Image (cartoon, each protein chain N blue to C red):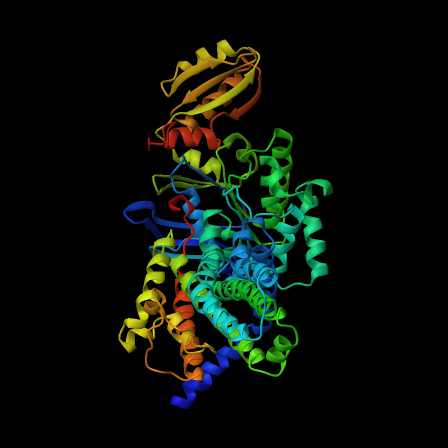
Length: 317
Length: 288
C-alpha cells in the first residue's frame, strides 16, 4: 500500500467562514495510530475534523483520507467513521434503532446490520436494556456511547472522534480509552480531539498542536518536546539524597530550577541543556555520592507542551 | 467524436453502483416516511388534510340530499379542491413536510448523520423528496377520497350511479392527479427554499402571493407557477364570484398533457438545482 493510500493528508488547506478564519495553510500528514488534536476552544480542531470528513469544504487546498475524497461518499464513508461533537439525534429512536438505521444505509443485509449493531453496542458497553430505550431519556454519557457505537459499527479504517471523553464518568472514560488503544493497535487511524490531556497523553502516538487556526507543532510527543528548546526541560530524579543532588547540579549554570518532590524521595530539576545535564548526572552516579533510583522526564507530555506552546489563555507563547 | 463521447458517458453511467443506490434510496425513504407520518408533530398536517372531510361529514348528517343538490355538491367539491387544497391545504402541508426534510434536521442538528453515511448526497436528497411526496400524497390523497365518498354517500343510489357510471370516478382520478402533482410541485419548491434560506417561511409567503397573482401575469411568467398548471387539470369549472374571481382568471387554454408535462419539467429543473445546493451544503449548526 502506498503512502497516500494509508495516510490522512492536508495539503495547504485553508478554511474561511466568510471573513472568519477557521484554519489557515495547514499541511499535515497523519499515519495510522492514535493522533490527538490539541488546542484551545476555537483553535480549529473541529474545523479540521469537519474538513477531514467533508462536512465542510476547504476554501483552499486539498484533503484526502486514505487517498479518498469525501465527494465519493460511497467509498469514503465505508472507510471513515466520525463521532461528532453535536449532542443531538433524530427524534423518537432507541439507541439500537439509531445504530441499525445507520448501518442499513450501507446496503448490507438486515441480518448483518443487526449483528453489527449488537457488536458495536457491546464494544461501547451499552447494556441491552438501555439500547432499546428512547435516546431522549439517555444520560450524557450514554449519548456519547451511542454516538461512538454508531461511528465504529461499520468497522471503519479511520475513526475521527471530537471530544469523545466529554460527559463520561471515570470508569467509562477508562473503557473508551482502552477501546481507542485497541483500535490503534489494530492499525486504524484514530484521530481524537480532547481537552482531557492527561488521559489522551497516555494513549497518543502523536500530537497535533493547533491554535488560532494555525498548526503549531506535530509529531511524537517526546520529539515535539525536544523541539521546544527555549523552555528548559524538567526531569524527575528519584534518589536517596535529593538535596545533595540538587546542590551538585546547581553548580552548573544550565540548571535553572530545583524542587524537592512532595514525598522527599526525589527532586525535580529544570535544565536548559539536557545533553549536558545527563552527562553530569552520569558522573554523579559513578562517583557514588548519591544513589539514583530512577530518572524520568517530567514535562514531555501533551499538557506541558500545550502550556509551553499555547499557554493557558490559548495565545501562542 | 460525438459517438465516442456518448459511449464514454454511457460507460460511466454503467459503472455507477445503481443497485446500491437503489437499496440505499429504498431504506432511506422508509426511514423518512416513518419520521414524516408517525410523529406527533404531524398532527396539524393531518388536520389540514382532513378538515374538509370532517365538514362534509357534518354536512352529510345535517343537510338533506335531494337529487338536484348533486350538481351543486360537485361544484362545491371542485371549489374545495381549487381554493382550499391547492391554495392552502396542500401548500401549507407540503411546507411543513418538505421544509423539515433538510432544514428541520439542521435545526435539530441531526442532518450530519446522513451526510456521514456512505450515500451520495443526491441520493439522500431525492430519497427525502420521494419520502416527502409519498407522505403528502398519502395524507392528501386519502383525504380527497374521503371527501369524495362522503360528499356523494348521502345521495344513495343516485350518488353510486354518479360515481360508478357517471363522471364521478373520472373526476376523482383528476383530483388525485392534481393532488399528486401539487405535492410534487410544491414539495420540490419548498425543499429548495429550505436549502436556500434558514427560515423558509418568508419565501413560502412570497410564493403564496406569487401563486395568487399568477393568473393575471403574462403567459411566460405563468409557466413558473404550480397552481397555473393545476388549473388546467380541474375537471369541474368553478364559477368565479366575489373574491374568488381574482383567483380564477381564465388564461390561455392548455391541454391536460401539456400541463402535466410542463409541471414535471418545472419539478425536474427545481430538483436538479436543489441537488446542486445539496452537493455544496456545509454543516455549520452554530449559524442555524
